[in-house]
Amino acid sequence: MGLGSIVRFGWDLISMETATSYLVPAAAGLISGEGLWAVPEAILALAKANPPLCMQFIATSAEAAT
Image (cartoon, rainbow, N blue to C red; front, side, top):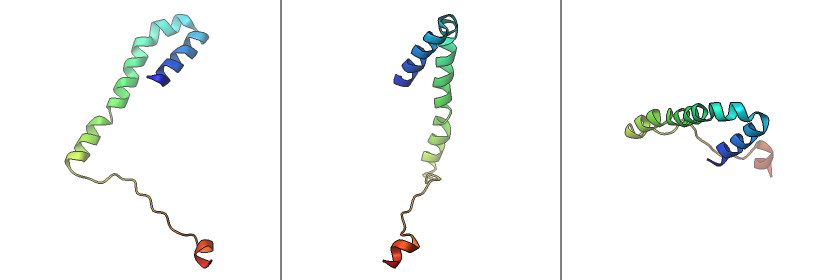
């Protein structure tokens, strides 16, 4: 919501007419865009799948030599 407020403020500075005309469709698009990931996320959670991201911190060859 904070980022949306900043975008709205900037949009008002650039063109207040288009900001008031397209505010509701732009907000609805952002909300539904974020909600698109909710369905695959729920399916992966039900399947108890691990996220496709893994991190591992290993020593480089220079650090291993010391």
